[in-house]
Image (cartoon, rainbow, N blue to C red; front, side):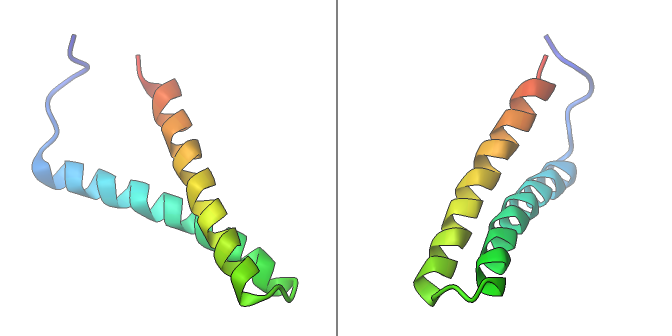
Length: 68
């Protein structure tokens, strides 16, 4: 069952880049919050990694609820 016309490779690449930027934005925001609270570099790094994991999970959930 198809939802519509297939995406071109350019559109697919742009969509993949948008997904990557979304995940990185969530991850970096976690790092910035840790940085603003004068955390150590290790904690800032862990906050970025945790934010990236959270962003990936959030992206997966958004894609899942949008699928038919």
